[in-house]
Image (tube, rainbow, N blue to C red; front, side, top):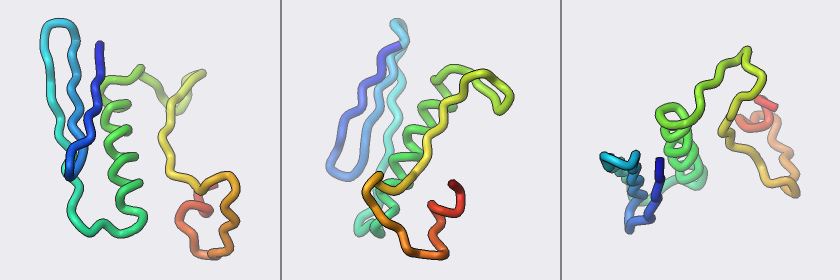
Length: 88
């Protein structure tokens, strides 16, 4: 399978070619995104690829791919209500 991701003016275009057929998935980003929303959209985009085209995995498997949103390794979070830190 061949995956090709192209950036467009307002989102992304994913072309998936399995050798015989090509499927196109379009992700459109709304204008004036809140700060974190762009990251959430891209994570959702990658999760869709993993769920539909990635290797099968389960919570009990030896290997499992996960796509998570986290802080940068040098970021010092002091927010007691941080949604990202509470899932560490």
